[in-house]
Length: 327
Image (tube, one colour):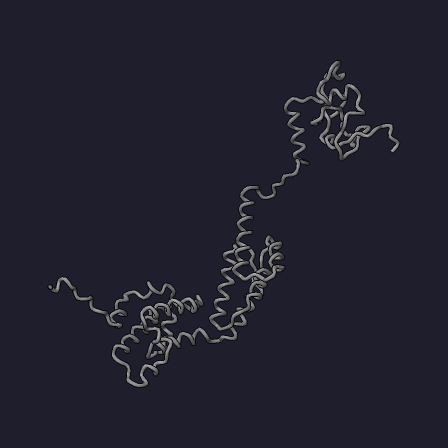
C-alpha cells in the first residue's frame, strides 16, 4: 500500500494564522463606529459576532488578568490580542481613532473599555434628552417607514445607554404623533386590548398608507361622485344652446327632463301647479297634450310657435299634487 492511497490530512492552521488571514476587517464588520451616527449597539453586535467566530471573544470580554493568573500569557495569546486590538482601531471613525490613539490602550480589552466609556459619558443627560424627543415626536410629512425608523433609532440609543422604555409608552408616543390622516386608525389602536406592540402598529400604519396611495392614484384630488351642479348645469344648458336648441319667443327657457317636456318660463322659481319638490312626478294631473309630451308620443298639434319646450332639471325631483286637494 502506497502513501498515495492515504493522503495526509491538510495541516491545521493555528489561531494566529487564522487571524492573519483576515485581510479586510471592514468587509466583515460593515459598520464603522462613529459618535455622530450613535451606532455603538450595531457596531458592537457585528464586532462581537466576528470575534466569536474566530474564538477570540474572551479578548474583549474577560479581564486580561484571568489569562495570566497561573501562567504568563503565551506569545500566541499576545499576538492574537494585538490583532484584535488592531481590528478595533480599524473599525472606528477617524475622530474616535484619534481619541483612542491618545488613550494608548495596551490590550484589546483596554481599547474596548475605552470606547464603551466614551459612549457612556453623560449618560443621564443623553437619556433625558432622548426620552423627551420621543414624547413629542411628530410624523408630519414623513412616510410611515421614515417615521417609525426614527422612533426605532431613538430606542436603540436608549438601549445602548441602558435605559429601555416600556412597549406601552413607546406605542402611546408613536400613535400620538401620527398625522391627521391616520386619526381614525390611532383611535382604533388606542382601544385595542391587548395593546399592540410597536411592530404591529407600524404594520397597520404602513397598510393604511398603501391604501391611501392607491386611492389617490385612482381618483384625482377633490373628485366626488355627486351629481353635477352649478357650473356643470350651466355647461349642460349651454351645450343645448350651442347645438341649436331654440328658445321660444315668449322668453321661456327650455329645459330637458328624462320624463318628457313641459314649458318653464324664465325667472320662474316655483314648481308648476300640482307639483312639490323632492319626489318623482306622475302623470295623473296633466292635460292629454302634456301627458303625450311626457310619454314622447305627441299626436295632433304642436305648440303655437312650433318649437319644442323642455322641463327644467329640477322637474326630475317634483311630485304631482292634486290641485283640488285642500291640504
